[in-house]
Image 1 (cartoon, rainbow, N blue to C red):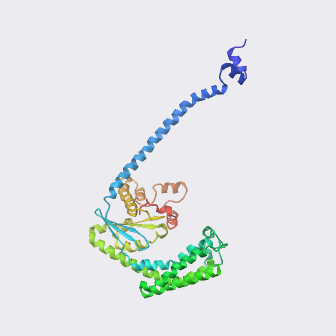
Image 2: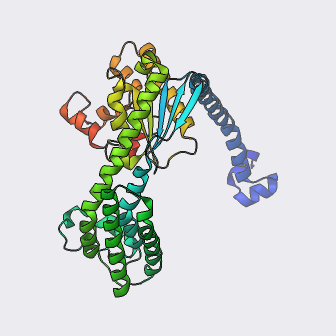
Image 3: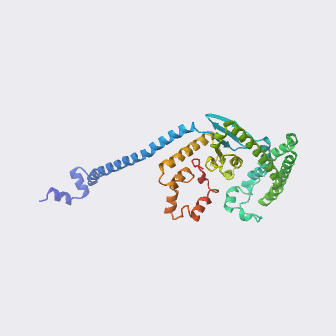
Length: 384
């Protein structure tokens, strides 16, 4: 006699489902749901536990940001330098007040403007260059892949003639007004040389409907001595202007305050090594503190709120200086990392990757190799 157990066991899946009013799959699903409930609860518990751990860091960051916001209001004295085409905007922050000046004489901007003519031509024609490195004297210094990326259109069109002629018109206007600008004679002569050579190069290129790297290099070589003259005038203007301003502000705030001066320079990454403002200001600061108080913040683009960015970063630096000595009192090397540009995990990562850590020649070389090349080592939140 067939029992209920044997009947179900011997029945086909469809027949059993029809007889009992549910499918085997449904039964399996029901069992799975029962099994899944504890698993889902465990996952939920784990997720909540991990969120509570994350909340610790979130609370820390809230407290850190609150301290930083208060500290920003208490910073000083600080000079913030915004590099620009006119030699820089300089802001002194002291005792809750801000003093803004543009100390560099106009010759700086004018000299650099004409010195940039070859770069202006290059920027106009670069996309239309051949993507092959020619047989020129510095061919080994031209990165073939970089050239390929820049020369994205190639020489198969003369579409460059229109923008190049427009640039030539701008140069011709400047040349016609050069005498009226009343520049120092040597600067006038160098500017005239650059403009004349540039107009000749452009006229020849447009007439021939052709140019190449070699012909551009010949033009650039001809104007380089004149560019050096312009660079000399620009440097002299900036040195005298910045030094004069620093002497004025030093007298204004007094020697005691000047000894604790921070200087924050906002620069584009490509000019952040041996930045012109830093070179001038550095010897005028307290030499015992200059290595930690002269701070370069390279950026991809100058920020819309440069003073805010400078003070926000400086507040981070100042509060980390104190935090380092309180939090890492048992490990001065890690304390120095928090006070400096190094990430706190850098040594541990180097160690796990099998790269010698600082203290060995290889470790030092590893750290310094990328600093003049990679902007990652110069993020906005780093310290000096």
